[in-house]
Length: 280
Image 1 (tube, one colour):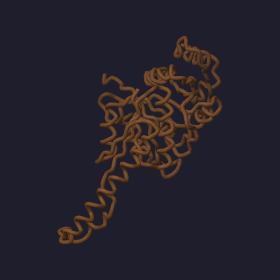
Image 2 (tube, rainbow, N blue to C red; image 1 turned 135 degrees about the horizontal axis):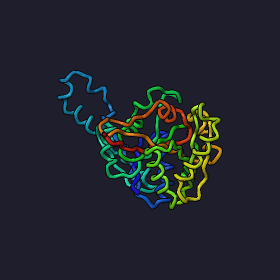
Image 3 (cartoon, rainbow, N blue to C red; image 1 turned 45 degrees about the horizontal axis):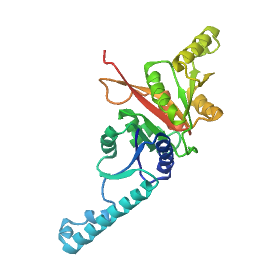
Image 4 (cartoon, one colour; image 1 turned 180 degrees about the vertical axis):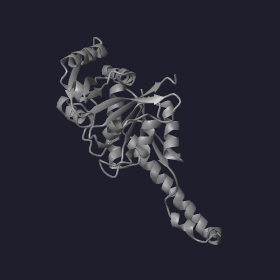
């Protein structure tokens, strides 16, 4: 396994790095830490001065020195983060573009997810949200509220569709590394909530999905946005995994309002596993 960890050196990114390190240790995986710098921050105000000033050799020299010092500081921070394991890289450009390029060699992205608050309506417009929409590999997003430091158990939420089955394939591949899996289906339609026939068929579908694997299954009712984090706490899951659909002809993942809300609000890290649907 090859794990990509984008960092902005924030507290949230550090929480994501802890999970990335834990997974890398479990799976004997390669961990690659990347920071994308969009522009030089040192003395940016100088470039607002009259253009004649920029012709001053002394000013140009000082700006070049500040830029070099800034690069060294970033590189030193990356070296420090990689000291616990892994390699590091400093990239320049647009974060989403550079991280998508870096993810071409990765099997998993583990990163912090920022928002102004837990109900930030624009979360999916940020770097993490855009990667979730566009990455070809699973993305594990970690919010600042997260408290877990290792991935020992995954709660896989399923609706028994192709995207959920793809998510099962991914987390089932983690089981040899000592990661437990709990399969869960949340009945959120009141028409089926008290239907014994639907409950029977749902339990049969859960058993069929796990095949012969000796793992726990859960059937709950309610709003998945509220039920899944609560259930993760009950079963001791460190991560909630969901399958997300991508149409072959569409740009970005087709995330419904509930998936959006789960990504925004869950204090439990979310593993978003992309599934490409046929264009037919």
